[in-house]
Image (cartoon, rainbow, N blue to C red):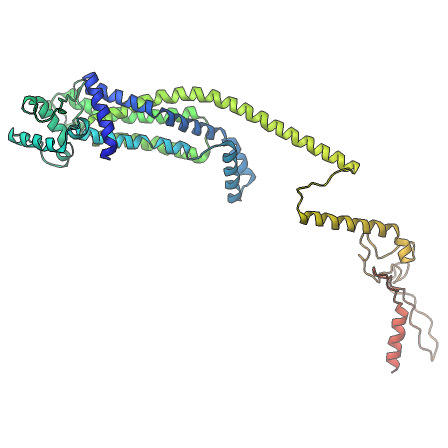
Length: 432
């Protein structure tokens, strides 16, 4: 982290020497960071706005593939790929300010070694002089964490005693509007009194984290408002951020020196202005993209409709050409279907000739034996009686078996088998 904090500390120190005001240097530092990150912030903003524009399409896909989550996710991924949308694009770039905040925090904590760039050997000599002059930073974790801030303030008051140690050593004034930005704000406002210093210095530091939290909430609220309607997942994330960002701003403001809270305020102000300007610019661009996309989709639909009509016309005229990209399996299936249709047509045309009758009773439509091969409509009497009329019996005579109708020949063309022949064979077997 020290390697990352070095350039930020040098930039903050240069701005301080330029303005001679620590608070103004913090504001300018936040502005420079915003300008440097403007390209990435713009990409994030545009990605989030484009993703919001596709919320109606996502709802349509969700309704179409309800109950099939895997298919829905595949279609969403396909849509994002076709339109060049990165769902994580907005989240990735929005995380960049946090490493910068940590680097700035380190630079503010170590103004002597990071902001001024005093070497470690010279800093060891400075600490010896501080001890000889009776400097005490106090006890506890807070005193240890911000020891260099207190040391730099003491060095500024006794700079003649440290002037020859290092040419990088500078005086530091942390005051801004009557506030000491090197101090950590206290949330115990009920303990503020004139005995602990001026009331403004205590209340002013207390208001810095509060103002940072309010501006952070306003920034998130404005960003949600200008983004328009969002899909449920994005809307849920935005609501979470609307709650978490102000709370985090409050924690940062009260847990760190006032300079960090002032930086957070400046960042929120610049972010609100940036969101407003980028929203106006990208709204116009995305409206043009939507118009072009709608024209492209309409032209595509018109072309598909024209091809469908052309194919329908050619099919009716019987001049359709085979698709050269058709798979071998589909071609074989089509050939079998054509062969079957040709056979059915020939069989229908020659049905009477094949069966030797005017009408084949077992046929139903194109199915030659739908009622069975041995089906005879008059088997149980022409009138639909349940039994055929009994033949007169003569004493001593065996009643003759009724003559069975012939069974139509099978598709192989074999001769018909007479039911009477089967009956004769059965009688012979019984005689034996």
